[in-house]
Image (cartoon, rainbow, N blue to C red; front, side, top):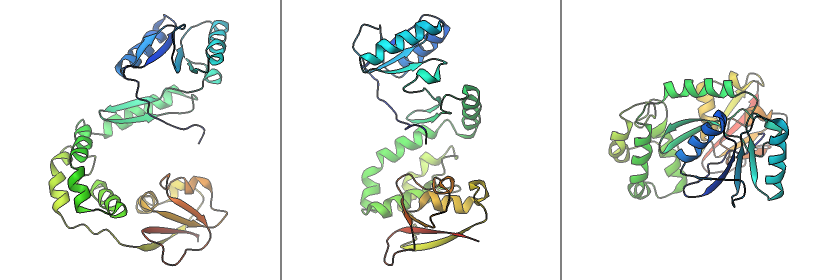
Length: 253
């Protein structure tokens, strides 16, 4: 992973913007949409965007800003960037950010358009409904592991709360009231057909995304392990008896 994706709350916070052309105006609109206060170079801020056409002027501005310990994005100059701005799919409060490490804005745009077409406009309503139902969810599933499994089951493809279903937000109470098979403690073996993650079946990829821990041989490639949840425990070795939750054993055929 070449960088750490984060979401910054900029409401009411200053962000420096240098430039006055079309690119600068586009960045101004984006910053203002996020609630930031756009200020000039001499103001105090933690972030800055440099959107000037001249290469030397851009490099000089970046140097001045970095000397003040300000993180900088230099438009169309990835080598001068401390952070990049992704393509954004906005289903407020759901935000999906797509980055390519500043290698191809066109690719990020194409992916954004694909995802835009896949996700219903009501997706934000589902997020709000889940948040509003948190007391009921915690009461029904007080154990964090059980709660996560119940949410995974509800949000799964074809589940009661399938995010692709425009009416999912209306089924929160139905989901909470239903009896859901939480699976219990189990170990599932997945036999890899190749080192290509695209050769995983949909079911295998879903299991990797749900697992609490991944047991694997030392030579299992990172591109396979990266399909697991970011916070899942990865263990190079044999399964441990008595492990709780869902464990996956990655084996080679």
